[in-house]
Amino acid sequence: MESRSRDHREIIAALVLVFFLPYLLPMAACDENELLLNGTGIFLTTGEIWTFDQGYQLKVKSVNPSDGRVWVELSLNGQILHEGILDEGETLAYSREKEILNVTLDTIYSSPAGELVTFKPVYQYLDPELAEPASDENTGYERTDNDTPDTEEGKNARYIPGFRAFMTLAAIIILAYCALIHKIKKIE
Image 1 (cartoon, helix red, strand yellow):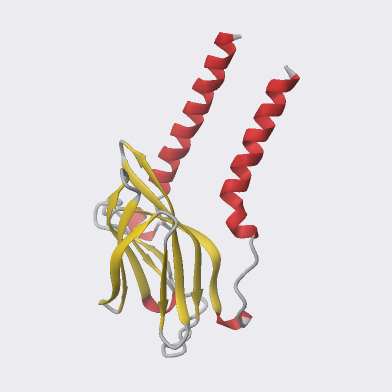
Image 2: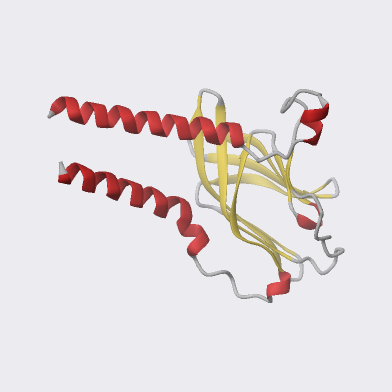
């Protein structure tokens, strides 16, 4: 029984490391005032757009989970700055005089509900050619027409990018883990 308990602790420790290690890594060397996003992770599904400070937008145009590739588009004020296909582990870096955005495609999760793409770590540095972001500026996930019902409550709600897909994936992982534990108990 103690061995099984130790195995559970090892699995939990491994999961914690996988999900939180990018946040524990040291940040890139730059002036603190220039760093807008410090190695965070973002979650998007196909068609979703992430709006960064200063108006940069990252859109997931298409996902191919079978070969671990994602078609992304980086734009600013409606003008496409970069469009291309990223493999898992590949980084999209955008620079002008210096690096502005550094986004790494981490993992593609697939479920019957669709694909969830995680980008981490994500770094954004202040673009000196653009106005500094306001402290209360709304940045993050930009919802699409089919995300929520057109109600007052839906219009005023705060959205978390890819939340439904993330929760679906979490449920699948928990169910798979429970099925594995049940199978192990049956064998013993």
